[in-house]
Amino acid sequence: MLLLRRYSKHHKLPGKLHMRLLIVIAAASFICCGKQKRISVTKLKTHRHDLVLVTSFWAAGPDADSKSRLKANSRRREIENAVALNVANSMIREVRIILDGFHQFYNCTTLQKRIRGKILDVCPSSRTRLVCIERNGSQPSYFEMFNYTTDPALSGSIIILANADMVFDQTVLRLHDLNVHTAATISTRGFGDGCEPCESIQHQLKLLGMQPLRMRSADRCYKQRPRSSWDAYVFHFNALKFDPHGFHDDRSNEKFTMNTNGAENVALYYLKHASPNITFYQICDHVNMWHIHAAPKTHSSEIWVYGPRAIAAECASIEDCLGIRGL
Image (cartoon, rainbow, N blue to C red; front, top):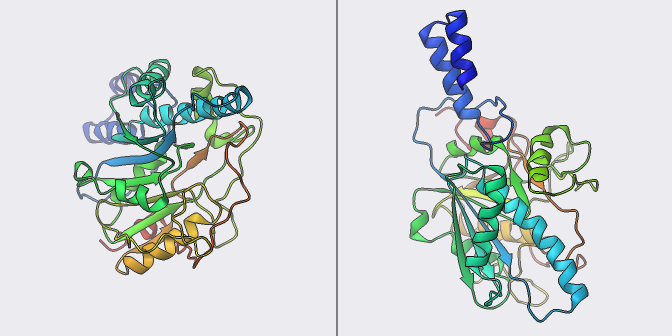
């Protein structure tokens, strides 16, 4: 910003042009200590809603054997880094974590201290709120995660419900103009070595002491249509209805969790059924979501959810994806 002022003074930029440049750069600022890039945003003169990211995390088991603890700790540190980068993202007003299995050695106080310590290395001036909610028992189901987004404290916000190892860059700014009658799904753009668009994220991870990810996470934002796998939902507070009799696996008749194969497709079916006035679009072509995952998995990848499935509609322009064309 200071360089821009010096440039405009030296080259005598017109007042209006100077202000336009200031607005563009202010709107395109990403992680406060990272690189700054310009991105195209919509030109609606409407109220832009705050973005709140809701996700879940698990506490370290104090009674786990050394091998399991080592494996879990490696993955946990990785996810903590992902959470820290989202908290450092000035485009997101609040990051809300549902922490299950907490105990005296790892609870919300522990987690917040660890995340805040990491943010000091990346973005000391971060103003994004970090909210942690302790949950008794095991990992919350997909239905329960959607229920957590109905907290009145989130009123007026646009909710991003995502897996904890997903990191957003400056393109998340585009979600501010989401139409209240529109919801979005986001397929991950992957991550890893040779990923030019995510170099700034790699830089931030280095500041956190994390080695560059050599194993590339899969890019699910395929060129082929439709995209049938995603890791995040975006919607207005209280815009979606959640049928308590839905969100269950047809084979076991039990509620399923977010990190289960096919869970997002079955969840979308029940969301569409309960919220027929909402149009769902796949927005990964316009909003980047990076998958930070190099450590071994801590859960089985063979489990699938059985039930009716749905996918989000494809859209061409950002205006179409946000449901604001013609407004």
